Image (cartoon, rainbow, N blue to C red):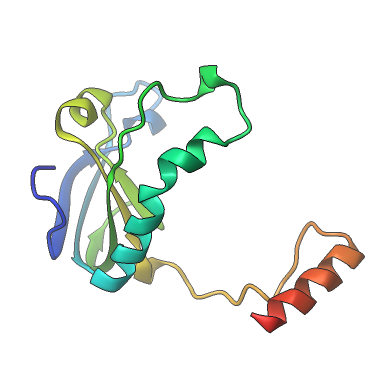
Length: 140
């Protein structure tokens, strides 16, 4: 956690013991990744706005954190991954005590997500809304 915005990010260790019925055994995971500077900068700008965005979310104050802490954010290209599954990203560490004392990182794994054309499919919309969406989407 002490190495802020490194060009090479790595994490190796035991994770996710909540899948074990006895909450004792975890998965071992390791990854090495390279930071993508331009994409990371775009996400950092969004993250800087997150405190204001969170204030406007439509849920009760009891469900919101008392004090929002801005995480370090990195967009990464995975070079090597050893895990039980592939995910779009990681929020590390999982332990609140470690987060409180050392901060935390949000990683987005760029090359683990297949590119999707947002205009190619429309789910969960009425026909009128879908037609309107596709018309507007094609202009972007």
